[in-house]
Image (cartoon, rainbow, N blue to C red; front, side, top):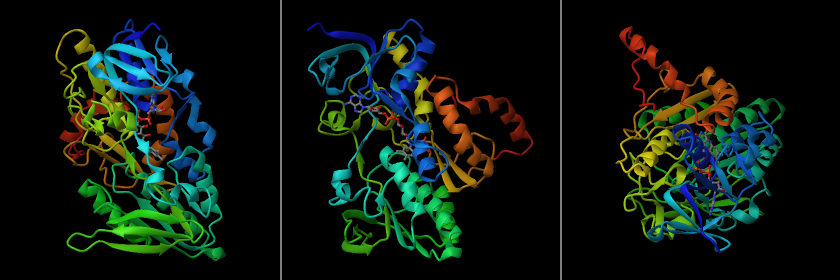
Length: 429
Ligand code: FAD
């Protein structure tokens, strides 16, 4: 069988793969780019929260993959079965090999539903649900709408996850809905059980998130890692590992359980020579250039990379122009010089009319794209989340357009001189 070959091969045609392919075509219209992606569909995953909240239809979060592959880019509809970077090739599930000059890994991450005994069998039944699966987003909406009262538990696992704010977004939306029905006898107790020691890694945001939960009477339990679910008996078992104490087990009864499962690098990456430690982990990249630490012609973008920042589509938006510039540099025999500053963002929905836009970078400090104090819930950021971001995703991000906030740059100097802007802003490509 003749081996396929592409100058630039992108493994994965999700958010990172498609955004990068568009940027590469923008920089070098003649560059030969191929994307390996098995799915016939492309999902706007951030929209699943909006589906669960009853704001949009699930159909609006999906488009055919063929519609988002940029013109001139070859789509290889197959799954990667192995990475063989010493031979500059990947092996597909059907055994065929695809060679490359430069490889960019964009496989996202794996959701490990089976890692929690009882979870996979309970999902979609017994009021156990999750916005982290497309097919359960509308189910979550129905579960919230039919909740008659009692204890609703929302979990956050011990591993890194995509969109670290999403587990709280769905809790706040549920809380608002339940309180609106208190007049018809719905009495709820909301528990946020997180395996983490804080609500968010950036202290200024975490403090405000703690205050928001307290204002609403939502109870937070730290160091609570979900280890088993019994759907029929409606109990959730947590391993509680508080610092300085012997770990214990806590069995909590629930009337509604929203689960965010543990997440990890895809197995095909973890077992490849590309992993941080061969045998486990994310693709080992330089956090600024996204270039692989051992293979100079390999890069990663998105959730699958070992970038020490939050895994979000917002991060991908900033990484894409950097990775594209560095891929072109390597193809031309230069050193990669473009740098990613770790920017990531998560719109924390706190109600059906307010969002706190959590923006930050490698310094783990709040930054603001919009010249305003980011540690604040706002209506305009709700409008962005509800109407702006979905439009931007399909029409500007996947097509490789510069970040909207770049257009505010000329105003920034004036705002600073007038003392209107005290907030740092991340570097925008
Ligand atoms: P993905 O977009 O997941 O793409 C990975 C692609 O690789 C997929 O298309 C998959 O089919 C493909 N693939 C997998 N295995 C193989 C294989 N073996 N061979 C070939 N292809 C393969 N981000 C935000 O910025 N803001 C938000 O508000 C937000 N909210 C979110 C809410 C939810 C519920 C979820 C689930 C995510 C949210 N995110 C949010 C996160 C965001 O969607 C991800 O960070 C982003 O999609 C990561 O892009 P990626 O390309 O790394 O991975």
